[in-house]
Structures are given as structure tokens and as C-alpha cells.
Amino acid sequence: MRLGIAVLLVAYMLSQFYRACLAVLAPALGAEIGASADDLARASGFFFLAFAAMQIPIGAALDRVGPRRTAALLLAVGAAGAAVMATARGPLAVDLAMALIGVGMAPVLMALYFLFARVWPAAMFGTLAGAALGIGSVGNILGSVPLAAAIAAFGWRPTLWAMAATTAVVAGLTLWRVTDPPRLPQPAGGQESVLTLLRIPALWAILPLMLVNYGPAVGLRGLWLGPYLADIQGAGIALIGWVSLAMGMAMVAGNFAYGPLDRVFGTRKGVALAGNLGAVAALLVLALAPPAGAVGVAALAAAIGFFGASFPMVMAHGRAFVPAHLVGRGVTLLNLFGIGGAGLMQVASGRVHAATLAASGPGAAYAALFLFFAVALGAGCAVYLLARDRTD
Image (cartoon, rainbow, N blue to C red; front, top):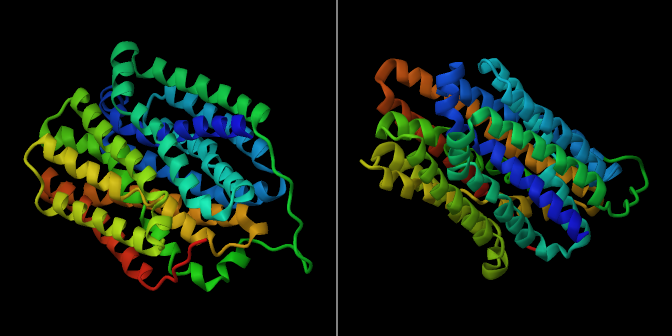
């Protein structure tokens, strides 16, 4: 079981790398294949939307088949997507590649959460979920300065070919080393489904925050931070890599920090709400009173990354209301909202930026973009005020 968890953690590092890599790849893709920031926003959205679309079938597969074959098969699809990216000749190929990679990365974190929920005590779920995100977020860091260095040394195509090969190896290791827990019997009276979960009223006030809590941080780190620094600060790829590294490290720290706080303070709702309001505040400063230099931008980006790392806490809050025999479907339903919301926000952010850019120029375009993220996250927090708290 320990080796299987380790393999899935490496796979999750790959997932974090792929969702963050476009911010650093943006200059090279723009220069060589003509991919604009709005093109890359669309491609990033396809990653998250494909990722989200897979969650319902993955949830059923985890409950019925187990994490070993589910994760291994789809990781192989992700390796194929990385190969498509390495051979891309235009923006449409990047769209296809990111969609395939999204399918490939879709089961990894949920396979880990499924094992945590089935094998470890329920009170440990938030801590384990946060630790997995923190360890996996090393991939976010690898997608910053190390990726920029690899591109400078070898070129972006060989670097992506290496990532495709690495993903294929991890798929094979998943099939070999991950162990499925025993299946739980279904209750009498017929098969239950994700619709059973949607009939749980306690989830209704949690799902809206799940929809918007991940999008701003991943949107900034995974896509908009690089173009913003280049367009507004005149930054090159090295500085973009360092600022991305700062935000990535803050996201790692946030994941570890959130994990045990429900047991420290005796509340999941309070911890998640306070953290997300902190992210709203940082986004509003970036939108309405942006700093003049890259250091100030890095500090605000780090704050958004740290406070915006509430995903495991909101996930743990929702999972607490899910029956044990439906835990696979439960965590993937929550993840559907989290990743699907991030995908929708990525696509919408590209349109907000493009529309404002045409009318008012780059400064106003980025201000509108960050304000869009702040308003969406604030609305999710407003609904979350109605949520019923629960700890295990």
C-alpha cells in the first residue's frame, strides 16, 4: 500500500506540473506556433473541462473496479497527450493535447482520496488530503524555474517528450504497485448513484464554494501570471519562472497548513471560509491597486496561492456527509465541481481579458480579469455561509 501511495503521489506531481506548465511555456509557444494568451487560456480550460467530465465515470470505476486499473489506463492517455503537445504545430494541437492530458490526470488525486477514505480513520482525511496536495504540488514547482531551465537548455519540444515518457512509466508503475482495497457491499434496494449524493441537502451550500475555490489560484499560477508579468512588468522567462516558483511554493505551504487546521480549531467551515476570504482580499488588491514591481506581484501571487489552497479542506467538509459505500462517487462529485469550475473560469477569464483588452488596453484587461476571479470567489463564500459545519 505504501509503494502504491508513493506512485500515485508521483502521478499527482505530474498532474500539478501539466496544469501549471503553460504559464512558462507561453513565450515559446507564442513565438514558435503563434499561440496567444487567449489561445492558451482556452487550452487550459480544455484541460480542466476534460478532467471534470471524467469525474463521474471515474467515481463509479473507483467504487466498482478500484484505483489500480482506473488510474493506470487513464495515465497512459495522459502520456499520449504530452506527446501530442511535443509535436504541436498550432494552437488547436495544444487544445487537443491539454484535453488528453486532462483525461489522463483526472483519476490520480481521487484514487489517493479513495484510498485515504477507505483505509485510514475518517478524522485523518483532511490532514492526508492536504499532505497529498502539498507533496503533489512539487509538480507545480517543477513547472516553474526547473521547466524554464529545461526549455532554455534543451528546447520545449524535447522537454515535453521527456515528460511524455515519464508519464508512460508512471502509468506502468501504477498498474504494478497500486493495491485495490476490498469492495464494500451495496445496500439492499438497488444500486445507488451520484444522484443519491445530490439529494443530500448538506452538500448544496458546499458545492458552490467547491465550484470557485480552486479556479483563481490555478488560473493565475497555471496561465495568467506569465502573460501578466510579461505584458505589464516587461518580465522575461527567467523572472516569470522565479515568480511562478514563489507562488507554487506558497501553494505547497498552504496545502500543508490547511490539512490539520480542522482538528486544531474544531471547524472545517470556519477554516475554509477564512482562507478563501483572504484570497478574495489579495485578488482585489491585485485588481484595484496593483503593485509597481515584480516583488509586489510575487507577494500578492503568493498570498493568493497560500490562501487559495483550501481545496482539501472544502473536500473534507463535503466528504463528511458522504456514505462510506459511495465514497468514490462522493469525492469525484466534489472534484467535478472543483475542477469543472476551474475549467469554466479559465475559459471565461480568456473572454474577459480579450473583451477588455480590445476596449481599454492591457492594464484594464488584467484588472478586469483579477476582479472577475475575486467576485466569483466572493460569491462562493457568500453561499458557503449557509453550510452546516461537520468534522469527523
